[in-house]
Amino acid sequence: MAPDHYFQFNCAPNVPCFTACCRDVTIVLTPYDVMRMKNGLNIRADEFIDRYTQVIRKPKKLIPMVVIKMDKETKRCPFVSDKGCTIYEDRPWPCRMFPLEMNDDGTFGIIANRSLCRGFEESERPTVGEWLLEQGIPIYDEMNALFTQVTAPLQAGDLDIDNPQIYQMTFMALYNLDRFRDFVFSSTFLKRFAVDELTIEKIKRRDIELLKFAFDWIKFGIFGQKLFQIKPEAVPQKGQK
Image 1 (tube, rainbow, N blue to C red):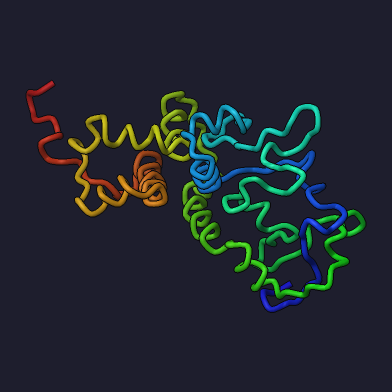
Image 2: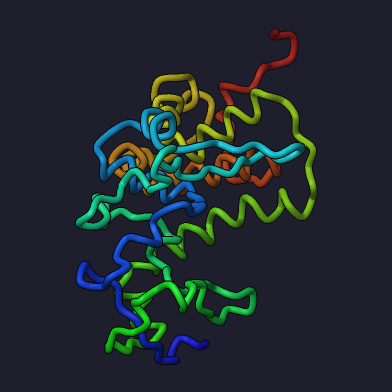
């Protein structure tokens, strides 16, 4: 389906299967998802990760998969009640996309099981584009595209990075923005790297700007892209240790 394609669907409390799709499902979170969700809950990122996610590391992969931890007994998403999603305004990308999925060629398909999802029996007929706008997808797509600039080279190059310090730094920058902010502002970072005042104010005040900064930091540290400049006074001179 193209963005101008109409499809029949709606999800609301009056639909008989309401919230059934929020059970026993793997919901992979991006860094932007984690940022939105922990802010919506008004907790720090490390608390969110510990309480609500499972971090799955894969051999020879620098970036792990972070998924929502379902309730052990009910297999239900921890953020879902009988009345619906308790963090609806900050729900992650997969939940916003449902019942759609994006194909590799930029078109869209139906991911939901039509025989189980009663939402397809509703009368609403939005276009794909209208649905995506209504669900707030554009900012997620923008941030996920920036994230892909980090993940794509790692996949293409098949880098085998087993240094635990590099893993910890990368994970912190992507998924633990509160600690990354502490790293930037409470360490010698700003004494070593030239960062303009406007950028400093942006990353100090807005998590989304800090996340963009983190993406650049990883591209600098892992791929050697010249996105940061070391201050001359931070470069050891000859004869210095």
